[in-house]
Length: 133
Image 1: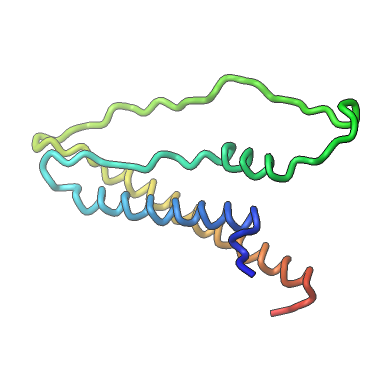
Image 2 (image 1 turned 60 degrees about the vertical axis):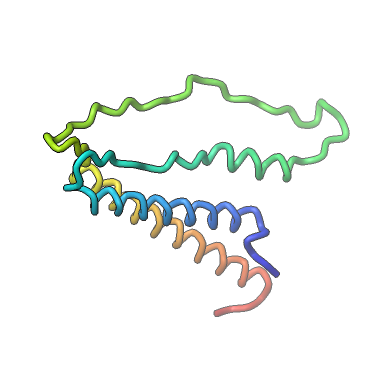
């Protein structure tokens, strides 16, 4: 049985892949901190809401009457964060090492958290099927 076909494990796997790719891009930014005219890059943020919506649509409960279950939609403005303009050196390079290193550390922390979630879910699955270790 391929556990990545289970919805939760698939989401965790995609998150770990995205974090690995982001770490690669950020390390390239750090490596090119002194390269003339180099512009830092980053990956587009993984949209967790879209991932969850995709998984929930497959798991939607069946209803026999419209009055049994009512759905609620939560509306509100999308929250966008403005990025401050980056500083550019005389060589045209706009990599800020302190900012990049913070992103690298955040990505490493997120990867560790995702790995812990994966391990705990795997342990729970093993317990459910009656296997330990």
